[in-house]
Each structure stands twice: as structure tokens, then as C-alpha cells.
Image (cartoon, rainbow, N blue to C red; front, side, top):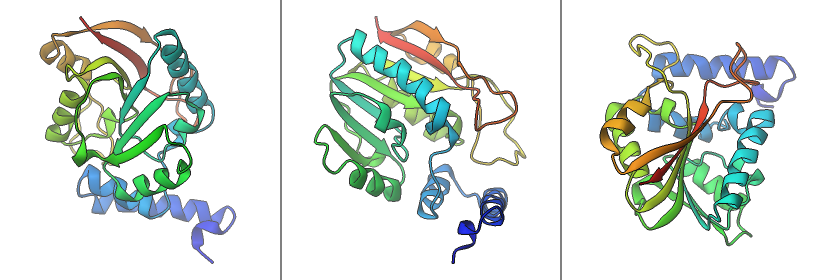
Length: 224
């Protein structure tokens, strides 16, 4: 029997092991997420329960009102959130080969959805590109820069970002896979062809429990 399957004790020890790995053996964000998924982890509480429903309600309404046909997501994760979303055509990219395999199996009978490794990203004309709960996990500057450039490529008509937006000193952080950034500074400086259309505050703001609240909010951009 696996330790994580033992009631009460199992989940606690599994969580502790994950925390110890992150603290002492963290190499980079890509390695972290591949090992997390390979060891049975998921995309985190933000993709489940009330936070997942909140995001799905917002995104589904936007897709419907703006007659969105094609959607691309950078950092699709385990795609649990995707189960609640109504996209006519969807392509999800991720850094983890393990989770991409899981997603492909989950949606094997849904021809409207496909998944690929982020290294194969090929910018094409798209109605909407998404970055949902991703930016604050991009701890490396070059990875963050590449992610933002992919988002604000002129091939994409609309950009939706769901993320925290604050500066935070990253040195000596115990939570190695999280780095909050004021990403709007990058957008204002580097994405002159896009404008911020709308901002939606989180219905479930963080109040000490990450399973029920989040520091992330919605930012809606479109090409000028």
C-alpha cells in the first residue's frame, strides 16, 4: 500500500514529502512540474472546487459573448479546469510530458481538444490565448519573458491572464516554485499593440487558505 493512500497519515506525509522536495531539491520550474505530475500530483487547488467554477463562469461567458472559436492555453496543467469549459476548438500546451499524456487520455474522444509540448508551440491566428494560474509559477526570468512574448504575439486577437500581479522578493524563498511578479509592468512596456479592456477581481480572494482563495485576478487584453 502506498503511504499517500493511508487515511489522514498518508496525505499528510505525502504533502510533507512534496514540501521537502521543493525546498531542498528544486532545480527549475520545468523539472518541478514534471516530477510533481509524475509522482501523482495535480495542478493545485486553483483548478478544483469553487475556484475552478469561478474561473469557468468567467471564461465561458467571455467565449460566448465574443463568439470565440479558437482557444490556445499556455500551461494547461492536468486540464481538470477544462472539463468545465466550453471551447469550440482548443489547444493546450504544457512543459510536462506526463501531464500531457494524462490530458490526451482524458479527452481522447473529444476531437475539439488537442495537447502538445510547449517546445512545439507554433503561433497561428487565434481568437483567444490564455495564461491561467501560470505566471507566478515561472520563477526563471527567461522563461517568464518567453511566456509573455508568446501571449502577446500579434497572431492572437485576445489575451486573458489570470494571475497575481505584485512584486515579491524571490531570494531565499521556501516555496521555490512560486514567484509573484507585477506582470502588468511588462505588458505596458512591451505589448504596445494591446490594451487592457477589463479587470475582474477574484470572487474568492486569498485569506490564508489557498484551497479556498487565490491572489489571482482576471486581466482581459485585446489588440488595438
